[in-house]
Image (cartoon, rainbow, N blue to C red; front, side, top):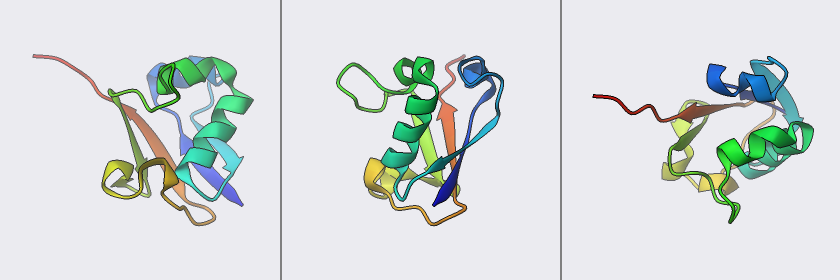
Amino acid sequence: MAIYVRIPTPLRKYTGGEDRVSVDATTVGQALSGLTQAYPDIQSRIFDDAGALRRFVNVYANDEDIRFQKDLDTEVPEGAEISIVPAIAGG
């Protein structure tokens, strides 16, 4: 079923400029896996070498932080929107 992954501006160069990508998935993990299969260069920006989400990458499923749900196992209904939000440091 179709899930939409919103791509933040700094990562769009890895998706050919696409700001929203459709993937077939039922969980956040499957959706991100589909994204990285379609756009392999984005994988190292989202996941570390062990395959875990990078600490500075926040992921939201329908505006809810997946860390407070089931992380990558968070289920998403058809038409759901997943947002990748890199943390921004500053002072």
